[in-house]
Length: 229
Image 1 (cartoon, rainbow, N blue to C red):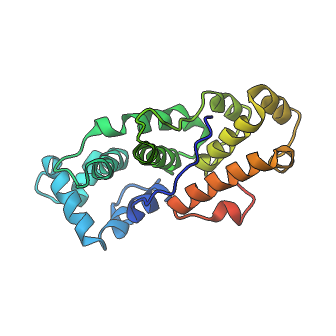
Image 2 (cartoon, rainbow, N blue to C red; image 1 turned 120 degrees about the vertical axis):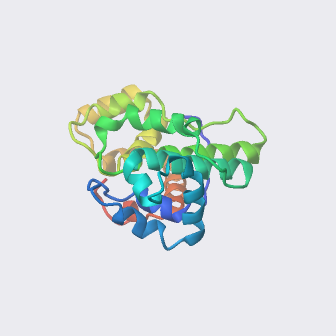
């Protein structure tokens, strides 16, 4: 992983709340719209952007017809467009979320399906990269999840509820040790705490700075309070 520091990104609070929520029950739109409805401006933006799918029964029925995942993807495209161009578009665009969906699909077997944590990570990285490119005036700078992450995840038989945090930690462990050394260490039974102790002070600081930036961006501090990931 190229050593680019992850920036703090001011992510939309209602949307990231939904991406962090367990939305396995989709027989009612209530859990979703309990989050969205209080923000009347957002509700109006969504009504307008999803008008092409509305059969006259309103936004909530439109969401149910599209399904949560499709509604989520299209809503993300609105935020991405606003981040790029400064205002919300009139319609949604799936092209803007193709890379996020590809990341989600790639690691889907390692996360809990009722949460959108992989989509959350992809959404953050997309906006973070745009922010970095603007700051550095370099459109080619990009933080990507390295291919080696998949091989490391396959060493575990379980699914992680917070797969986004796990991927970020693995990215930094790969940066510190390389894929062969990290694989051997994990196969030999070494735990995260042991690997952290083996990291250089600079590598530890780099990882903690980035995890703090991500945690602040998604408004979550659990990883710094609890051991389980």
